[in-house]
Each structure stands twice: as C-alpha cells, then as structure tokens.
Length: 339
Image (cartoon, one colour):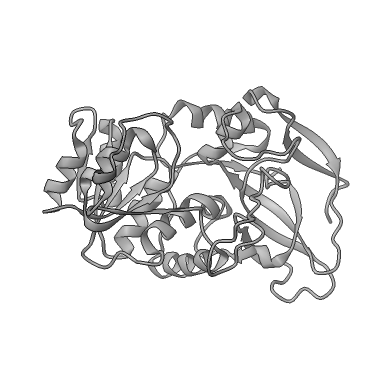
C-alpha cells in the first residue's frame, strides 16, 4: 500500500543548489489511462545542474519537481491501461510528445515544463514509459532516458555509423561515456579525449581504441584526423563553441558532427569555408521513444551495463548535484529512492 505522503524535491527558484528543497506532499491520484510509478531511482544530467544554478538556456517553469530521468515499478494502473501491468519495471521517456519519426517542435521535457522524477511516486501516461532491460537494476535503468538515448541518436540516427567506422567522443560526461559503450556494441572504432590520466584508464577499460589528452595535445582535432587516416566518421560534440573548431578538424569530408552540448558559450570563430566541403552537422535533442526502445534491445542483447560513479540516498540529492558540479567523476550520478 502506498503511503499517505509523497516526498519530492522542488526547485523553489533558480540560482543555487540550496534552492532545491524536499517537501512532504499528498499522494498523486491515478486517473483513467494513467499508472502510478513507485520511483526507485533517478539520475542527473548536466542540464539539471544548469537549471538549478540559473544557467539553463531554455524555458524553466517555476517550482517544479526536478530531473528528467527516472526508473521504477508500476504499483497501480487506472482503467483502460493496456501497455503495462502492475509490477512492470519501467523508465520514463525524456519528453511527453516524441514517440517516433521527426522530432516535434513543441517538446516539453520533464523538470523544465512539468514535474519531473525526483519524487517517490509519479502518475504518468503509460505511453511515456519504456520497459527496462531485465539485467539492469533500477539505478542503472535510471541513467538511460537522457544521456544514453542522446548517445544512441548521435550514433544511430538517420545516417547510422556502421561497423568499422570511427567515432570521436569528447570528455567523460554521461553522453560521452554512453557513446563509447554503445559504439563498441555497434562495431565502431572509438577515439576519446580527456584531460585526466585516471579517466584515460577508465576509457581504456570501456574499449576506447585511442585516447588523446587535450591538455597535452591542444590540436587534438588534427591528431584524431591522423589516427583515423583522414578523419573520423562521427563526432559526438558535447562541449560547444570551445571545441567545435577542433571537431571540424577531426571529421572526414562529408561525415557528421552530432551537435549535443552547450557546456561553453565562447570559442574560436568558425568560417563558412570551415564547413563548406567538410562536415555536415545535426543537432541532437535526446531522442524518441522508438529510439529508446531500440537502444534497450541492443543493451539487452549485449548485456551492456551503464557506468555509475556514485549512488546517493534520496535525502542527499543536493550532494549529488554538488558532486556533478565538481566534475571529478566518471559515469552517472544516481539518487536511490529506497526508504
């Protein structure tokens, strides 16, 4: 039986991690066509830290429950629910609108436009859920909706990278680590960048074929081009203007730079002719439910296990944000909701 109260973390106002406050709220009520999910775990992405600190570039509605990524168990189903049953293990799609095909122009992600997953119980339309691979824990499953689907879309979108192609990943954030893992099960060669020797070892363990320390090699784009004998087939570009010129340098003529991140706002100016005759670009906005489900089939088939750096208890959600801000981690920051 569900408790009378429901714990939730809401962002009272942007500007500080301290403004993320836990409250006891009434239990949400299930209506026709809805399910109640007992949230078992959530995970953080860089966008979550940006929202809390007031640096998020998009719309952010007031006083919302935070986090777009969560996984849990269905504990109640309303009338006419057929997609799932009570007891099913699920994760939430990043948005409420994108199920397949072309990305809609009106997407409203959780945590920015409507209440997210940093709560113990969540009522949701079952169409916005996917089934977790059986071998994953809830903590591992909670890492998938944003970072993993984004990486899958970058590698396996409209023009998929094929076996033997080379992908370049930047740094060791959630998307980049998933990109390495997913690239390996897709038969791709991987070149990765980092600035840390201990992270180099972690990347080697995941299967990166070549690793470039970008502090030691500032012209890392040229080095990646050399290592791939003429340029890589795909760049998973998660940084933004500060790295974009090097990403263009690294990619082979006619191949793709997948634009994902806005970790930086300034960088070397790009000339028209830097792109002309060189790379194509594609902006990645996470992915659809169809992408999520196809990725999960690949994860299940290869028994891929997401990389988790630290699991925090629910009450210490603020500490998870602080750890993310430190950048001294490898893999995902997860919050366990088990009481």
